[in-house]
Image 1 (cartoon, rainbow, N blue to C red):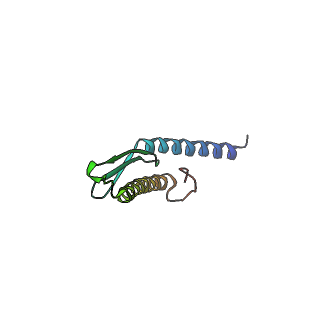
Image 2: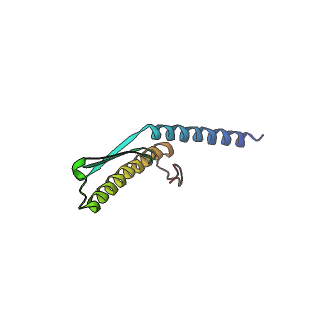
Image 3: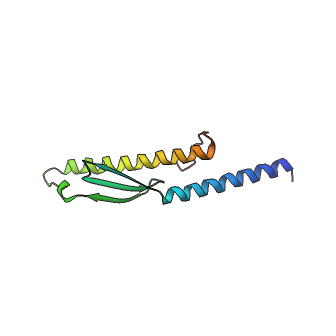
Length: 106
C-alpha cells in the first residue's frame, strides 16, 4: 500500500476517533435554560436531546394556555441553542476553527 495513503487513512481514523469521543462528551454535558423568570426550565444534552422540562405550578393558568406554551417553547429553544453553541465550540477545538458541515449532525 502507498505510504501516503496509509498515513492519510491513519489520520482520518484518528480524527474519527476524536469526533466519536467528542460526541460522547457532548452527550454527557447538560445545558439548562429557563423562561418566565424560572417558571419553565428545560434541560438538554450537549447533543441537543431534550432531557427534562420543569413547569412550576403557578405557571399553569387554564385561562392563558398560550402563555405557558410560549414559555415552554422559549425555554426549549434556549436550551437547544446552548447545545448548538457547545457543539460549535467543541468542533472548533477539534478542527482548529475549520467549519465542517454535519460534524455533529447539524
